[in-house]
Length: 250
Image (tube, rainbow, N blue to C red; front, side, top):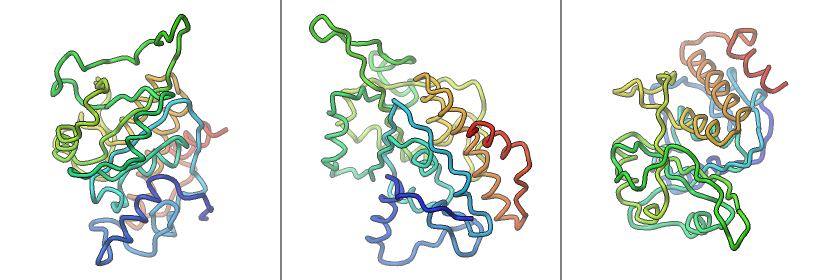
């Protein structure tokens, strides 16, 4: 049964994108039927009662390609479901939203651009979070703000190359040991993780263990609901993926 939540950053961005559209967006390849506004799934497979919000010190900033907010399979939405400190901005080559620049300049945050280090000059690449900084004689530990490029791989490379306002920040290069479990869209490589899988790795690196585990479990449950709807199967809420998420919520 659907529950009511205030619209989060990705939801608001999606609404703004729909207002600009000249024709209705029709999702291709997904389940058909009326969709829940809260989770984007068809009503018979609604996920809203399983939404799991985990407060964190770390934040997530999503830079989203033009059509990502409209895709029911987009997992940036799941990040905003779980992590309250999530911001989402549509990316454009020629304009930058003032609110994005203000967020990146906020002194409470240490931004990290999450991107493969093999494509970046070595002096910008880090594999761990930066230590506390000294202000006068006092250490000041800024909160990590993970900038995730929510797009296809070719689009993400374009965003990275053509966003000069990101050049001042360290590039966090992740080396995940596991292969992607994401099954809703194809990738040419199994080591290309979806956006919410990347967020889970970042949160774990920041010591946000519960949030990282919840993100992983929530993605698995969302995937099961999405595929069950597409294949016209009933949801088994007693299965392992649901029980894992419920155990984390408890």
